[in-house]
Image (cartoon, rainbow, N blue to C red; front, side):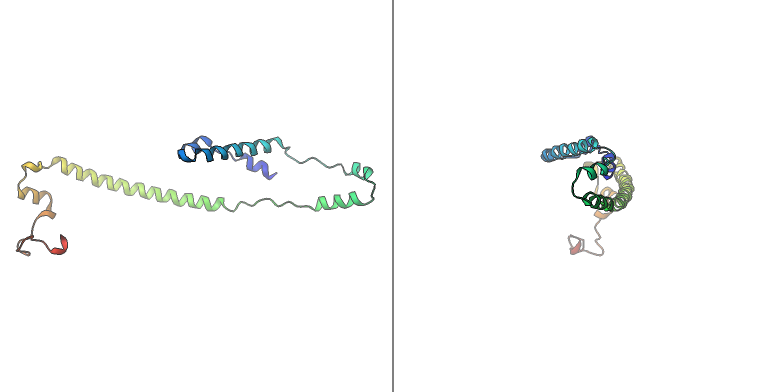
Length: 161
């Protein structure tokens, strides 16, 4: 039965609840209540449908051929089961997200090492109140003014200001 297969898929409600914002807690509780009610209903149903006693109905129904017609139609009845078309798409999206997350983590680790070297540079440099202009230009080369190329104040191209 399709309902049994659906009921077997467990939801981790605790981890789900941790991700719900406080303003949507009521909606979440309604969803959990409805899900629990559906699960309880599915578990109360038998695994296989009850078998119809066609011989009893043939003796009980007065119109001849009516039960045979119902039996034939009942046996010909095919109820389609839902086909899962989204799990593969979701798994592909999850794999891509995991790949992107790992790439981001690697990039973050590279940035962290870069920031740690900058922090070490700042921790080991002379304090600003004790620095001369030459010390500042040695520590931060981008602050050095090119007075030969730009002899007039601000000694930088206007576009760089």
